[in-house]
Length: 157
Image (cartoon, rainbow, N blue to C red; front, top):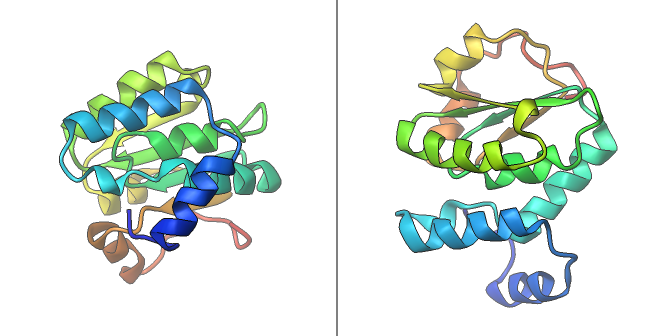
């Protein structure tokens, strides 16, 4: 993932933040051990921020563009209200399968829906509106914001 903070600040926050579930730690470790571009993972600091934002917003429907290994979707799922769910879009079938393996083992397995394919096509086919949208800050995901928006998100989402 693109660095938001300096490495020193990231290390400090990682060391002092409340850790997320062991499943997320396992996901992070396996991502770094077995996948290319592991730095794209959201990680503990961003995961905590996403969980906090989802907890505060209490969205019933979350859209994530860029699943990667599922870390951010799992982090957000922990903040969902009881009737909340996440639709996460991933272009790579291999990465989607990796993430699905973690989703299936999580307490939120029935609340996370992985869609494989180009995000623009996927989003256009989804029923919204979405209450919360998280777009992974990658070059591919950024292109999503340059296309005319669909009526997929709520005004405050």
